[in-house]
Image 1 (cartoon, rainbow, N blue to C red):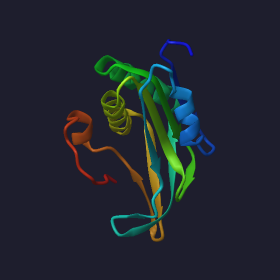
Image 2 (cartoon, one colour; image 1 turned 90 degrees about the vertical axis):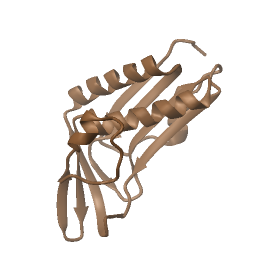
Image 3 (cartoon, rainbow, N blue to C red; image 1 turned 90 degrees about the horizontal axis):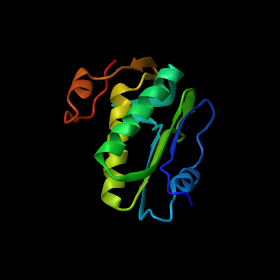
Image 4 (tube, rainbow, N blue to C red; image 1 turned 180 degrees about the vertical axis):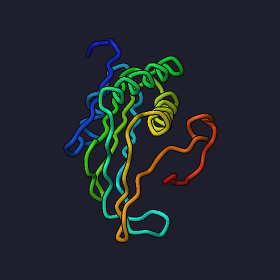
Length: 159
């Protein structure tokens, strides 16, 4: 296998490839760890029944920002291959809207990089989510605290 670090960034309108496929793309003979994250549509949020999610975004800018975030992760940790896939379409219950996979020599770097990538993607990437409930729908925005303070951690929604 080539030793050059690879980056895979892609936006999809169809279902995402499997985590196994993502893991295979970032696998390396010199990697002792592959860490993955899959964000899926759940059937509820704050007591409301969720029917589906829909993602929209500005593709070229989203890809550019994802590349920047990956470069930042590479500066912070000794990671090898990185994959970030995101849906820009309707995402039914149980399907993945985002997949992230990172390989590195050691698990800690891979796990920290994955957490950083999803946190920064959610805070900075021009991808917007609309949640559909039994009683209506709402566009979700970003929390100003989340975009200005990376240690600002919580579970909430911003309409």
